Length: 218
Image 1 (cartoon, rainbow, N blue to C red):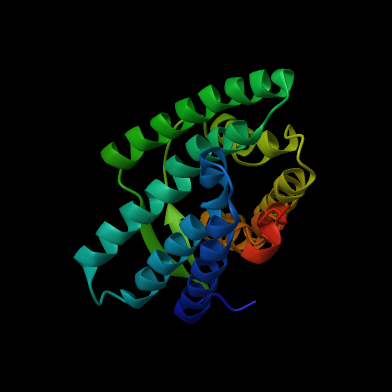
Image 2 (spheres, rainbow, N blue to C red):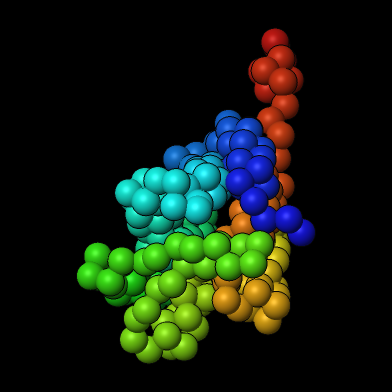
């Protein structure tokens, strides 16, 4: 697989289109946060495409700003956002309680990582054919486990099969990225998860044409 500005921009543009369709299919306000996931991943991929263009040392200040913005997506947004989006979809009480607990964990993880983004800014650099995000923080293994709990495992507690499918696919992608691309885990896994977010579209069935939705005249 080729990771590059072209790959990131292409994925970002495709996800914005798919995300727009997904949002249009949402029928309730509570469905919008989950429907917006492809759009958010699309924005994140466009940001990484722009980061690619700042190498090597073409725009150091822009690189720093974009790296921070990208890191807020990857480190802060997803562990906070995903369990809340899944919770809003969930009608079954016991599953809602579990998801609420995971949402608190995700919020704690996001705030913890935000603290380090502010105090120990993440540095991006090209290593091999990938972008490595150097992100020093304490208790890395524990934080990673809680991060995966929030972003992937939370979806496995959903009563909706397509939500569980996305969670399983994201978890497998995380494991694969960790095993084969550990140095570039953040970039590679976010790319895989972004592509897999097209599964979100499958959760929202296509609405019938307006003429078919109208009640027949009596």
